Length: 125
Image 1: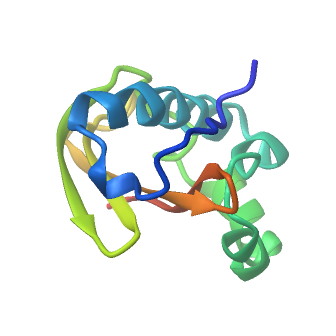
Image 2: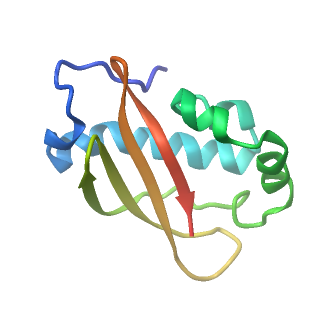
């Protein structure tokens, strides 16, 4: 299954929230599943080249191995909103854990890399 989307609209911030969610929700689901199963290669599959180059694979590997939160994320998606800035759009999610009580903020930053929409940032805090 390919999630990367090629379109004629080159400015992602011009897309409506509904159009963004068609792209963002499958990407977020992919990140949640890959994080829960500890599949680093799958986790970074849709990252921009600059993001992949900037990651410290050893530190990310430790996070996958040692973080109870990142290995037990609820795969339910609860969209909060979007923030548009420059050539990127940030999609915000309310994130829960299957093991820990409480809520976290999920952040997914999308933009174009050449002709494809890629992930330029992803975090839970």
